[in-house]
Image 1 (spheres, protein in one colour):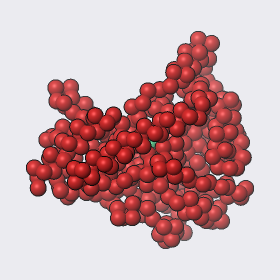
Image 2: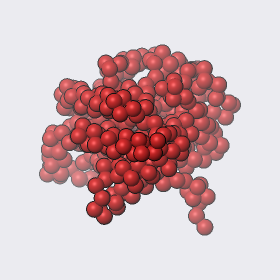
Image 3: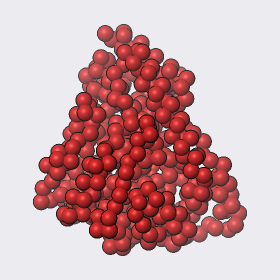
Length: 386
Ligand SMILES: Cc1ncc(COP(=O)(O)O)c(C=O)c1O
């Protein structure tokens, strides 16, 4: 009766577990919810004020489909600086969230049964979005002992005549791993030289720890196959604003705009002005936010070591994978037990791919007191099950 493609899709497991946790909470249980990828730091006052200003000045209508010029210009300055390469406002499309930006890219590139390589563990929407556009997700598994990072050769070994694109997410959700700049550069160079697009999901790029810097450097021809996705959800806590963007060569952009125009017409005007206000906040603001997550990361790493909980030390992002094999080898069972007995909501690692089976993902979105209590409860449960 329904579309087979849509019937086959899975609802995001993270949302399912979060809503179960909410129900338990509503039933009076003292649940610590570490499931959602939503930074708890408040939205900056300038962003809130920009919403008032936008509405009070009568800006309530459609905007230019690609996004208001002022915002695209601001994004182009911000991204050009990062990439060390001039990116023009014409190469920017403002989308209703980063998720939709990835969909636009895939919808534009993928023909039925084209292959798109994803490196697991990875954000669970990639696979579903690829399938939604009729493509086939080709999965590259990774090894926890190597921080879930693969070499360029392992990525290239997955390429076939049907490969249309590769998706790379740095820092990665859920592992927090980052890729060496050389691997990224080689991948960009490879995709430029072949008919393979690189979708580079940079949504957590303002949250990289230990003073690590990813050096991007682009040369003119290298941009033809590169599609950069980013947004405001994680860097500025603007999840509910639903605003992100995609950057590509003009030739791809021409096609992507068609998808966006038919699906959204434009991104909400209020969210676009809010995003503009976000990019005008002084740079040190993002640095301070990163420091909060880095402090929490350090706290979790230290406490896990003290409590004998194994974990993968994240190099960025807002998540951390902890090893729950001592509770159960299945991360789904372990997450259920953790929810039922420790009253902590976490996400089973296996939903991000088989490579992270045996781990659960906790989000670093509570203060240290919450993280302390959650780790203590998980550790008590681990001791009980030993
Ligand atoms: C890796 C990754 N990419 C993209 C997104 C999309 O974010 P949004 O649609 O809120 O901009 C998320 C959200 O969790 C994510 O984890």
